[in-house]
Length: 423
Image (cartoon, rainbow, N blue to C red):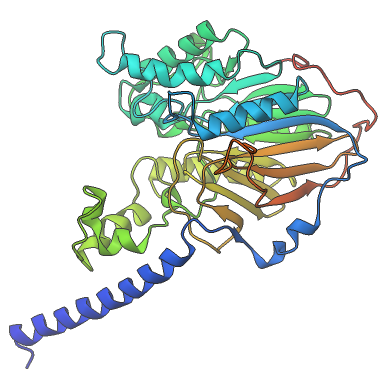
């Protein structure tokens, strides 16, 4: 007969074995943390590069989660981005993928954190003062006061601040609407912007013509996106939103062994108290139910499912997001999915799975569009010795598209930065 003593002994043995296994996993994990992961299918990536004889027609930088940049003028990613801006010239654009001001966006003028928030945003805006290309800001959950019920006012303040202080920039979709909004970047290159935070936001959020929005319910944006993609099959399309659709990082339900084994380190970095089983409760909750910013959370899950249902119908569309603080690339069901959220922070990202490339490192992705129709994905990371060169050696690149779609003329002149119209 199993007594209480025997039960507790068994439970202790299970906890001990689990603790030993987690400790082993922790040691293994430490070996590959912050190391570049490239899937076996992409092992020969370094042997492939754009043809030097081909002329670049448009460049697009995709930079997410800049909200914690250093304000002393020595931020490595901002310095790297300014280097990119000077090299790219006017036939280029930058999409800032949200979470532009940590921790909670732009508070009210009398708030004690207002001055610090403005400094965080000012140094980003200053980087674009002399830039002749397109600058497009998106919003993320932190810009909406981390999704709290008063977040809409935070969003409106940030949008107004950006447009007042950098008049040539765009803040999309405007007025906090869900979108989609289209921007013709150049001939044959279309950007589609969605406000993914809208679907997971608590409290008031804009909807309908009274707010200047083109949609009147939560499903209509996906119908409009389907129509946009269908009518623009002849173009090369980038869809941008803050929230990723695939991720090997925290918001995708991936946690470090340390978070399972030493959960108190989340409160204090030196609190290495092993709590097997108990320490797994919070990560398991995030994986199964999810915080509001996680893929597992019901509104996020529904938004993701509806968006993927549309995107999976259109091969070669490129979807770019931030949110997770790392660099990730997925090639899945003929689509290309990017996570470029390490503009000012880094966080754990798991190797393997569906990912073709992951790196826990600051930096951003770039897309290069060539006259022969090729589109190349490039990685840009800051150099540890910036005095020599602000750009570190490239850790991954890939040709995403091989040629022009129907009715796109390869010999057309690159469009100026202001080409096209927004819908």
